[in-house]
Image (cartoon, rainbow, N blue to C red; front, side, top):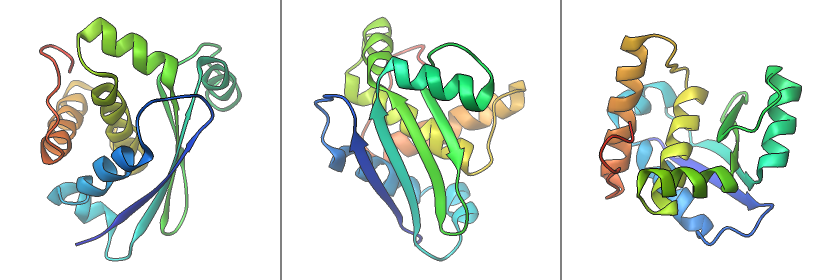
Length: 151
C-alpha cells in the first residue's frame, strides 16, 4: 500500500496534535481510488495550519480572490503531492456552525485539500458527489463521522 507522509506546521495555536492530521492523511491511502492516483512510491504532503489573514493573502495572491477561505491546495511535483494551507479560525467557525468538534472539521478540510491535490474537483454536481463519497470514505477509515448535513 502507498504511504502518505505529512509534515504539519502550526503558525497559530491549534489544540489538535500534528499526529492527528498525519493519521487522517495516511489512512486516505487505503481508499482504492486514492491509492490508484498515488502510485507505488511514498508520497509527501505539507500542511500549514494558520489564520484567516494568511489564507486571505494566499487566496488573493494565487487565486485572485480577496477573501479568507478555509483551505487552499498548492500542487507539488514528483513524490511531493503539494501543500495545504488551512485557516484554524475558519475551522473553529465552521465546526461550531455545524455542531461538530474542531478536529472533525480539520480532518474534513485536510481530506478535501488532498483530493484537490490528486485531481478531484467539485465544479459540477457529479464531481461534488464523488468528492463527498471519497471524503466520507476517508473519514470513516479514521473513525470520524461528520454532523448531519455537513456535506
